[in-house]
Amino acid sequence: MYDTTKPYIGEILRLIRETWETPFVSVRDGLLHKKFSYPDCQPEVDGIGTKGIFHWQKRSFEFAVEDALAMGLNDIILRRAVTYGILPHVFLPEDDHPAFLEIAACFVRECRKRDIAILNGESAVHNNMRGMEISLTVLGFVPAYKENRFRMGDILIGIWSNGLHSNGFSKVRELFGEEWREEFTAPTAIYSELLLDLNLSYDIHGLAHITGGAFTKLKRILPSDADALIIQNHKLDPHLIFHEIFLRGVRDEEMYVTFNCGVGFVISTNLNEASACVSRIQAQGYKADIIGRIVRGKGRVLIGSKFSGKEVEF
Amino acid sequence: MYDTTKPYIGEILRLIRETWETPFVSVRDGLLHKKFSYPDCQPEVDGIGTKGIFHWQKRSFEFAVEDALAMGLNDIILRRAVTYGILPHVFLPEDDHPAFLEIAACFVRECRKRDIAILNGESAVHNNMRGMEISLTVLGFVPAYKENRFRMGDILIGIWSNGLHSNGFSKVRELFGEEWREEFTAPTAIYSELLLDLNLSYDIHGLAHITGGAFTKLKRILPSDADALIIQNHKLDPHLIFHEIFLRGVRDEEMYVTFNCGVGFVISTNLNEASACVSRIQAQGYKADIIGRIVRGKGRVLIGSKFSGKEVEF
Image (cartoon, rainbow over all chains, first blue to last red; front, side, top):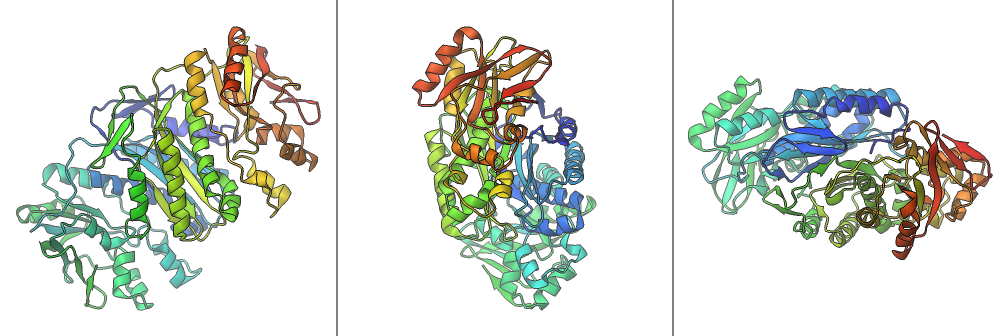
């Protein structure tokens, strides 16, 4: 709960109240009135992790907010849910009022665009911490439940990432030390609107957000008698920063378990729909390609590495 | 979202699934099925703050979990809400599997006692942080809405705190440096069950959880033409640690704006019910006393300091 004795909190509360009336909910008198009759999905909570060290250094608060939203919205979309509310818990290493205010304003702007209510929040000063963190809880509802699972014969479609996104930053810091690159603060792509749209138009079977655990995430939604094959020569080439990380001695396996390597999101459809689906994604301004398929096998993910050319197996 | 590539997460997921069927909700297939028809309250999010430095040092994880739950449950009860679900985001400074597991087990035990579902969660390693943190989102429903506001002539009832609770730790660390006292890891009292019961039996007008901002929190629910008077000679004497903090040079005003000074929660009732209400609280094993009243005034909180005897005004 926002501590209203802090002087800037009144301003933050004024800002977030601008999000309290949406097509989906209305927040009044401490109650959350829902205007939908669909079931809630299991909520999600996630953070931006140690990427927050770079965001704090560079004061790239707008990108930090995008990262936090992306982690939440890209996860909840796996349940085919429409996000109606969030709760951000912002940690800064000092009581920096302009920073807290700017972060709140960014959240309000991004949420108003998407009809998301900022239901509550907390700003915390952690002087025992280097860098910032944003923990974000995301609430959504599910208009139509559908299992998230790859099916035999499915075509895998990849959607290009925006770079490192918000994962693997412990490894990045191990390799680059105190060095900063522009790529370290670039925000994570938010795929949720795109995927809500695709889900209405195509029979999407499986969805995977390539974050922590990266391509091993495909295993979660893979039938035990199937393998997921990812070909080497698809068009979603890893950004230069990934090649540089590889060249600093990270092996293929670690690359594909730690980083998105250019593929931010993977979905599957049947063969008939795959090309149309790729075109639709591209028409919405995202780079996408067919990156593989689901074949008979034994629950493995097999990837033709874009780095060495070798096959990686999980 | 829990990253299932971490080896201990399977065990954590197994544990939290034990909380997915309660009298209030059922979590299945990524959906949150609600068994109640009351409106949701505005959710809350809060953390244990820099008290987590001491919890990590002493590995007092059980108390850290109680602190996190107390911050959430004692806040949401201000809306007279029944908590049905939580989402913990646990930050540790290293990837300490036994610690993550113990924390999850503590949450499960405390939640099962209270029919609370652990709807999801996240475990994060922050090697840029000294100490641990738990951010907790709390969801509840409101069986019967009632405004939270003091009324003219109300009697203020205080409920004793368990010591420092989870606030004022920046000040504590400023005064005590690296020193540790048993009081620094003692858990925050959880008042939610007590207050749900009181709310059913008595006409409770105002409720205030004395945490960040301490006694200034009374101002939020005080009519502008009234003052809240807190007498000096009530029975809820500050714990020794508060006197020691005062003796280290913290002035009365700062004591009452930073610390609970022995009073963890304040409620108000009309004069007729106050004594019976105090007896009921005591019968449930909590120390309580009448600590003041609401009189005509101008929106001030006036406190007879237990430290110097002087009057403190907010």
